[in-house]
Image (cartoon, rainbow, N blue to C red; front, side, top):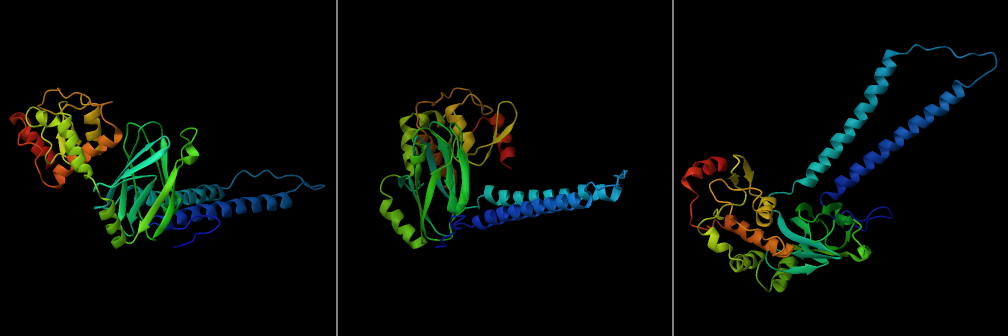
Length: 327
């Protein structure tokens, strides 16, 4: 494992060298700019200092000079922008097929769950060399998921889903912190991320994987809440829903992503699906954030497995709109 240095923790993810490179570039460029300005100040102080029998001569301006000191800083600032945008783009786009981990933050604890079932508190086990996408929300206040060795930090917000990702490159144990003050025990909200060889992780997963998967737990909850009865008849079918385009009553189209599913469960009247009555009740306050993630995992599984959540077809008046939206 890269031991890091006195100035930074080890670079333990694929994004870490890019973040460190950007920081080094900004630091060196800022230092050289400061040095240049300071040197010019010293030179001008000496060269144009007040002397006996010498008077200042009025300078009316120099077009090449003014163009130069405008263009040069602009070019430097543009390099800052493009370098930062390049790193941000890498940071914000998890690769296809990344392994999902669901994260719930609350005062003052991290709860992390693998779709296969294992649930951890203030700890996370991941395989080396596999992109890991963190799907996060908060039960109470604003938190911030911060893993210094991976160079990732992402706010975790109540009533919203945020995401970040990393791909670990070195096995070992790395610190996890909350980087947003969240109350009196904020400093105790920390844990460990354990990076394992793929074979070791698979063995750990089989050992820790007792209990139902998130999708299975979500299916059970789906039945208990009575959702199956409505979605088998008068409500929109859920098979193949995730990732598709959904036509709304106001004529717009939305993508059925995690945020859409979350909003539809907690605030179902906000986005009414075309052709269906606005009869779904809100489940806000009836399900926890962990249960909400389980429901979403179940709905996602219906699309991933190609299973149908209901044999009920949409009303004929909107069928062609849905097919057109999906295309």
